[in-house]
Amino acid sequence: MIYLLDLNYTLVDKGKGAPRIRPMELQIELETYRQWLIDMLKGKYVILTTARMQKYEIFTLNRIYTKTNWLPNESFFSIFRHLPHIKKEWILKWRIFPKHGNNPEQFFAIESNPQTRAMYAKYGIKSAPAIDDFGNRISI
Image (cartoon, rainbow, N blue to C red; front, side):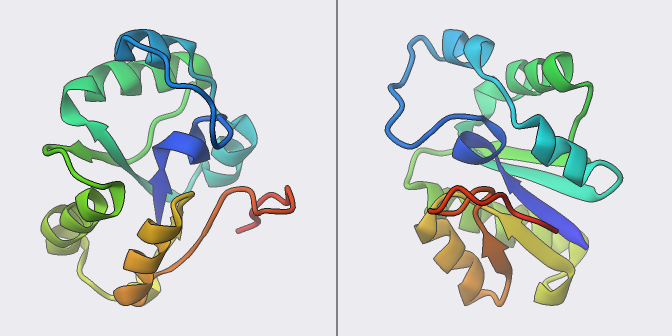
């Protein structure tokens, strides 16, 4: 199984509606990560997919490693500005499928954005948020 892991509101322990912090480097510096989610994913093949711009990739990954002593097997950051589900569909079609194939049975997405979950469903990929509307944590 390959886990497609969302960054913002999923790996990043931040609730919906939390204010954005600028500059972006400060936001990344202040981010905290869901250690329980990382612990659950350790030993599994994880691809971090994010709408965050690629220019923040190294800083973000360094921060994740510094705070958690963990990194995903692969990561894909956005190379263009658009809605998150559009960015992630591009990543899926042009980065993930060419390397791993497009069999939906081999993927599971942990994703906060309902539009992105709908996009994954269009490709037959099952998905769920890390924490549901009732505060229940995902179990895989």
